Image (cartoon, rainbow, N blue to C red; front, side, top):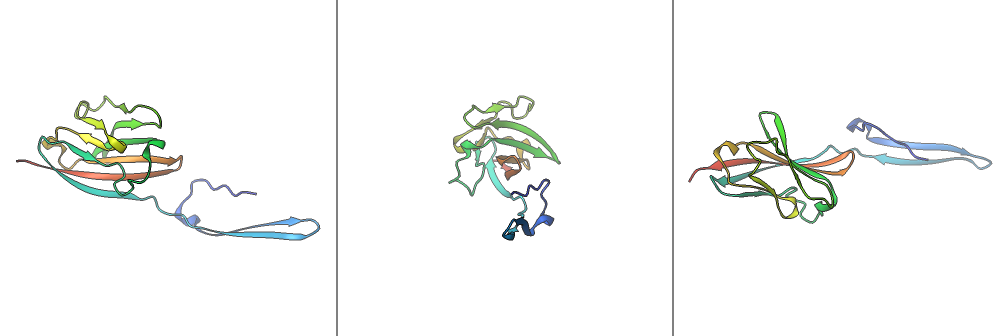
Length: 152
């Protein structure tokens, strides 16, 4: 027997019990404690000099995790608007989105799916670069890096 939960929220945390009758032995019961964790998004700040290359790790604290086995995407955001820069499916080459005039020729997916942005322009200051890794259809790990650009 299995219990399937859809649209899981924090409020579904708690103890669940399954009871069923077995003839001629009576009833059987099993209990399970379910803990629903909130989706985590880690936030970082990177500083870079004007016209230099910046490499942003996808999931900075999870270098032991092999990201090549999961689909991922990089986005850039400003003022609540997000734009997709690159997507990567397992065992496939990266797909760069040409819709971004500002980043079309300036981004590259590097080792361990780090995003390389070059050269950095003053317009990059304050932008948020986000990496989303899809571990499961309903589980996404996110990491966001805000960029500070400084002149020399």
